[in-house]
Structure formats: structure tokens, C-alpha cells
Length: 499
Ligand code: HEC
Image (cartoon, rainbow, N blue to C red; front, side, top):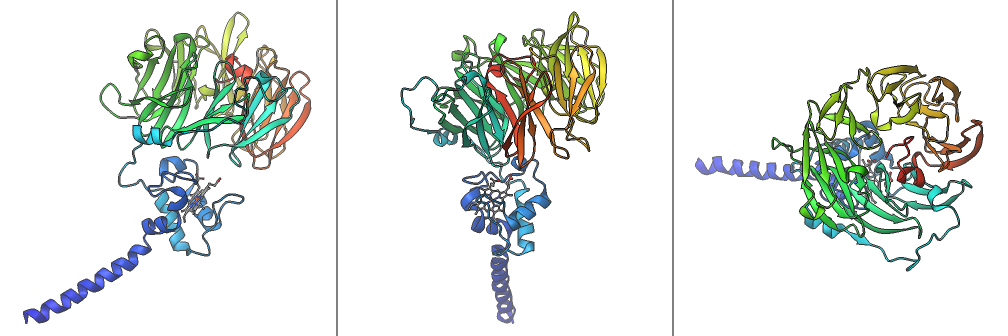
């Protein structure tokens, strides 16, 4: 009897085991290891393909991921899997890449050090530009469409060089104070140092798994990288990108947090970093004390800040909370000194400053309302709300032009660029560089004589305008040129652009 009973059980067990095995091969984990890991990494941290972790995927939607895995992405190594996998399997993979791994992946000292690559130079000893253009009037154009960077001559508007970047650059390239070297940060935490005189990459290192942005110290010695994953700041030697220090992002109460952004505050000889999951801003000195280990000064706030802006001498930090409440923080006193009454969702990081009558004003677009807020920086009162055709994203000007430019990034008028007179505070012209297509992100040439506008599409362009007559001068085809950065205006911290 006993035996009779036992037998079927073991047969049953064996049967279960085989079905479990069969099911296993179709589990998304196994499908992933078989079909995807060779390019995206066993732990989804990325190899030749990008990292496939929920936070890294960011703007990619699940439906898009399904289509992408099924059909592939044109002109990339990402081939479609329609012939190899059925729709249910593809759906399970699309869900899988949006699922957090069981164990939070780590990226420590050894990983950072092992990832570093230095490239031999094609022009050893060359310390002047290998081209004729004015090296301070170059623009780097980040083309997100096919992950390339173009080097554009700001006088002739000719592309003098174009090179592939890491997947999905973030936060804008950062120039050192001479304008010769530039540092790029990628979504997946790669830092690339590029020599603009020799037009070649010098070194690369992976500083994290998911990075936000980086800042270079004004003395050119250190690069600080702000990460979402792991929760830390990574200090690199700007010379060769070797690791100097990892600073865990733990707030004053012991809670771990992501870093939302880090900036160089040149006049203070410090980095300013903001925590994303805790109401804290840090000032990290690199002055004489760097050898003493980058001491952190914590400024505790009432709310988490999502977006920032500094005044020209970095005494004040303007931040907006997730709900849109703006705050002015005096960095010396370490406390909130004003709460400007901005409704909507101000986009402070694209705010710009100009002289207006006997004061300075700050102009900022709003991500939710079709309005540009003009604030008097001595009283923090709103002196004007300029109505626009819809919510905007970027705003730009230059010391040598009477106009400020702003886009209408969201809504049906996304193809409009408004030109605002900085003294009358009125819109004087609305341009439509490419009807029906998103136009955005203006940047000026070194002397302010020309404004460059992006047509933010895969078959996009940069449209160059004479900044006085507002007439189009040239149109240069580009693959989704999300941003362009003029060397001179950036290294001189023009008040008309972000830093
Ligand atoms: C031969 C290498 C390779 C293989 C194999 C591969 N991929 Fe990719 N994949 C890439 C590359 C390269 C990209 C980036 C394409 C680009 O430049 O936009 C990419 C992009 C993606 C993206 C979009 C990421 C983003 O942020 O836009 C997803 C999702 C993705 N792959 C999923 C998969 C899945 C799931 C598999 C397995 C079924 C797979 N891939 C197999 C190389 C590969």
C-alpha cells in the first residue's frame, strides 16, 4: 500500500519537474539571457547596448518597448525579434525590462576603476587646434537621434567634425575653463572626455549605472558626477578620469537618496548638489580643502527641490519643489529667504537673467502654463507674466542682443518660437522655423550676432537666424539636435544661457 502510494507521488514530482523546466525556458529571465544579455549585459547593466533597468528606460513607454523588441530600431544593432519570439514572449520581455531586479545592482570602486579606458592620441604633442575655426566660437551639437555629436563652426556654420557619443547623453556637455576639453555624461553613467583641439576622445569611465549630470570644478581639477544609481556622487580626476572619491548620498537623518543634479559654483570654489529623495542641498568644497576630503555642508530645506537656478555670483539658489512652489535659498546663510508666488510649474533651470531698468530680472518659462514669468531679483516680485502660445521649456538670450527667445514646447503650437523684447517685455515676433515640427533650444554665437534654433526631430535641423533682423541665414540638417552649446558663452557663464 505504502509503495503504491509513494510511486505515483514520485512520478508526479518528476512530471512537475519537467514542466517546470519547460516553463523555465520561456520565462522572461531565460529569454533575456538567451536573446538579449549578449548586448545588454547579464545583469541588464548594458554592454554594447544600453542598460535595461526601469529607471534608465525613463521616457521609453512599455508599448514602445514592445514594438521596439518586435521590430527593432532602424540603422542600429537592435534587430527585431518578430521571427524568433512570439508576441507573448516579446510582451513578457517588455514587462521584464520595466521590472526592478531582485537585487539592486551595485557599481563600486572596483567597477569604476575597471571600466576606465584611455585612448592613444592621433596627434601627440599637438596643443593648438587641428582646424582653422575660432575654437571659442565652436558649438557642440548633441544629436540624440542617432547618438552623435557634431562640432559646428560658429562663424561659417559648417560642421567640421562629427563623432558617435555614448547612448543617450544627459545634462549638457561641460567645458573646462580653457574651452579645450569637454566632458559628456550619458544616461548609463559613462563619462567621456573629449579634446576639442585634437578632435578626439581622451578617456572614458563608467561612474555609475544611471547618472544625472556632471560638473567640472573651476580650477579644472575635478569632475563630480551625480548619480541616481547607485545613490552617490563620484569625484573623478579631470585629467585622466581616474577615481578620486565616492561620496554616498545619505542625508543628515541617515536616509539614502538619489542625486538630482550637481553644479559648479565657481565663485565659491565648491560644488552644489541637490538630493532627489530628501529635502537637502549640499555644498561640497573643492578649494584648498579638497585634499581634506571634499567636506559636505548640508542645507536642510522644507521640501525636496526638483529644479534649480543660481544667481550670477552663486550667493542665491532658486529652486522649485515638485508641486511647483519656488524658493530662494541664501547659500551663505543656508536658509530660505523668499518664496516667490509662481503658479504652475516654473522651469527654473532654463531661467535667464538680464538688466531691466535699475534692477536685474529673472525670466523663466512654465512647464504647465503658456506664460513667461518675469521676476524682479531685488524683491522677488513678479513684475510681468508674458502670455505665450503654450507651455515652454527653454529660454535663452545673450548680453549683445535686445531679445530673449523662448519655445512653446508643449501643445499644438510646439513649432513656435517667441522673440521677446527685453525692455518692453512684449513678444515682438513669433517665428515658425518648421511648421508642424517642434522647435526648441536656442543658443547664441559668441558675439550674440546669430541665434541657433533646433528642429527637434529625427530628420531635424539647426536653423540659424540673424539675431537682429530675425531673418533665417542657414539651415543645417541634424538628427534630433536636442541641444547645442557654445564654448565661449558657456565658459564665460553668459547670463543668457544655462551653466
Ligand atoms: C546585437 C545586440 C543587441 C541584442 C542581441 C539586443 N539588443 Fe536591444 N539594443 C541594442 C542597441 C545597440 C540598442 C540601442 C539602439 C539605439 O541606438 O537606439 C538597443 C536598444 C534596446 C531597447 C531600447 C532602450 C532605450 O532606452 O531606448 C530595448 C528596450 C531593447 N534594446 C531590448 C532588447 C531585448 C528585450 C533584447 C532581447 C530580446 C535585445 N534588446 C537584444 C542592441 C541589442
